[in-house]
Image 1: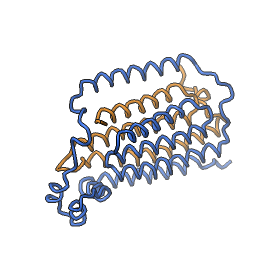
Image 2: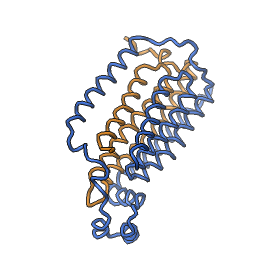
Image 3: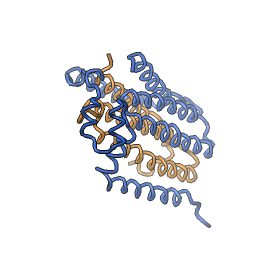
Image 4: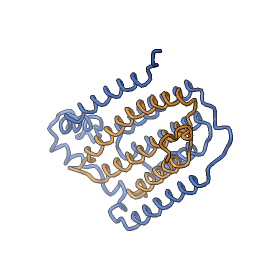
Length: 187
Length: 105
């Protein structure tokens, strides 16, 4: 991906991220977060993670944010009337973020391994294709295309079969929990 | 050119924006959105490391599987959290964190 696209999408992600915090109206915050997540998905795709980028858009920008908007609509929340900000929280929060960013910049300044670019670590299709046992993935790799979803699926179901069932259980428990939580108590 | 450090810095900035939001905002829904933002920032770090640490010529897919699990858990968490917010709104008629101060010392 050209460098200017990286800067464009990073700017998009961070600018709309700031808008989420700054805007007073929850609906505007939620819509800003959608744009921020789309920018983030573009960054994922720039890192050759096509599958993760796609589910970032589908799950976060699609499902989760629509859920947020539904709840905002159902609760009929108005924007916070007065723009009263409590100064200690603002100063404390900004200080916390500043300390974190300074620390991170110091660490990254000395992080020599992080100075390599994507061009320095190209994907090695031939080497990967030779070791690959699954035929569809092998042909994709031989054709110099990255079968991202297939490789994630392979890792998911060959190395983490127990964890994916655990996640299924978690979603089931979550669903039941939501139903019980949002049930009105019968008088 | 764009290096690994650029991605890590963007991720860190996004995380700290979310952190500021969680500390500063009083609206529970906005705090929740900022939490989601922080989770996504962590995901960006994982994906960046996955791409830059090639295993057998391909990105490290263990990291991407972890991102997949994070997104799934985040989705479940949002569903439960929003149900709690709805229950809270019914009890207090407000979504401000100021409305919930029973545990205040």
